Image (cartoon, rainbow over all chains, first blue to last red; front, side):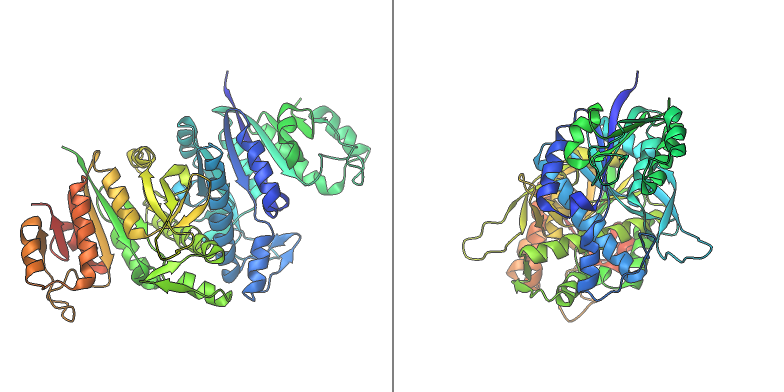
Length: 262
Length: 262
């Protein structure tokens, strides 16, 4: 029987508000057992780019990362956000240790090569050094991971935090029973995107096709669900999606949407 | 017989110039055996503060760290500089892992309480989590340490990198034979501050008092030397001071100034 681990991903909706972040970290710190936190970016990088007069270009919700923007996201994600989260978790008695994908070769990546769009210094993950994570977890450290990776030539790359959470969840799946939790701004996967009470509590392989056929799932959620099933097929036990302030009830399955491979 | 370890500190003179940094990292990567790199800040934080219109105040060469400045130094030191060094070392086959003092409780600190000067968010180190360093070193990781620490309340603090190097050297002294190397812009401790060839090759407890009596040592070097003897009294085997591009010959004692407790 494998030990349980929670891998929790938070994004801008938590990070951008100091009070929200403090509340979330309190909740996270009281989750029992092994845990890893993966954080995204948030508005601070955009604000910083504006203050420094560096124009930002978004394509399909992804930030085009030129040299100046890479510098900003490295500073903001791996520096300011990561170290603030780590210091706050330490004060809550969680032995947090902040890592980017460059550190200890945690996430080896390559620069995205897209047929029509030049994303700039955006990286896609090739491999995870799960040995480093397992060693730290064994000594009761809690890895806190920033969405910056590096390629084999030492080039830093801006990388999607959802993907990083998934890759890490898959990588530690042979050693742990992994519960991957995506915290976002909605209460879960909704039947009606305008109605927070219309959460679909459980999505399984069995009912997913039916839900697709009935076209009841908000289209924006489909890639997240496909990735969730992908993770489940690669050794993750359970994936949940829900609102950050319900972390404990998402963990027990009493709120949010839980996706399993049944 | 203890294994040797090099603890090398670099400052702005190396960090501020991409070509110098690349050359230095090449030299550092080819130092044999266990090693830790501690880096300072450099001009990038000052440039960033200027671009963001945040006035900087220096007292006795120390940066007064208000909230806005703390944000900048956290971004620049623990984010940009640290992750670039780590990624470059990784590409040179050194399994570098970047840490601030907040990470894994590496450097517990307190906000400086000075009788007459309010340094702001500047920290003085109380303790080192040497267990984390020893564990990483045992697995052949190379810790790369940024000069940001945290207090018990989760407040990040700007901290002198020379001091951090010394504290870390002392902390691992029971497990390793420590050679602490300070890389700076001069060839070593000079008899004549204008003459790079006037390096004093060796300073020991025995000849230090004599050198002081003869008033041949540049006054600006005295605090560094006092700290060096302090480190030697706390378990460090050898302290060297020299120019960064001579790293290998400093390590063997054929250039720079070597300070020992004889």
